[in-house]
Length: 223
DNA sequence: GCGACAG
DNA sequence: ATCTTGTCGC
Image 1 (cartoon, rainbow, N blue to C red):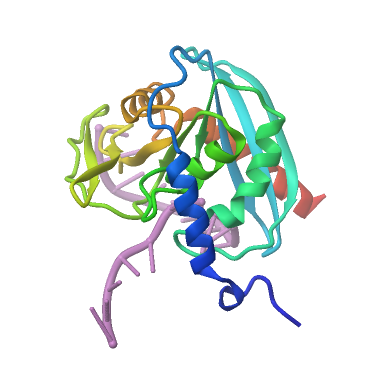
Image 2 (cartoon, rainbow, N blue to C red):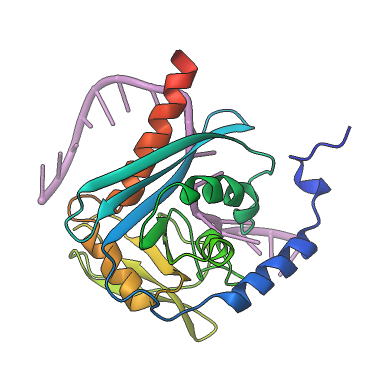
């Protein structure tokens, strides 16, 4: 029996071609002038093949909660660095479809990816929505350490090109990795990231989505 | 060949 | 990502 979760049974060259195609379709300029609503998306995993995807929207820049949605999803692809989209794209698409917002913040890289097609960009291109990639860790590129004050940032570079920014959303706390997802400039992405993180390192929309997904997952485990 | 490697 | 209590620091 073929194990679909076994990385050895996957044609990574073919998936790389898909990612390069996605990268060519990414729009790096602002197609949203003044966003009034921002949503965050995330997924929580329980077992290998079961997870919960959540999306929560807020007013911007006031950050008042507007709407939320969470769904149970089947996972049919393993976690392989640089191929995260093939594991989380479908669940994200389903949950994003139910929540309306001007901009979507995704817990992953956007252009700050070896083939410039991280999950945030992939989702943006496929769903045709403005997205921002906000990751807790670096995938590729190099950058200097930003100042420890909140709001400071440095650019993440790879081969002389700026692919993202290392942003300090909280004083003396590890920075987040921000990059263009789709239909928004890097400057706008950084601005939105900072404005949606008034208190914690992780921007409120993503934080709320993560908490909702995790809560739903644990409710199913217990009850 | 070796190390790095979003979630 | 997830498994987990207390604990150090602003």
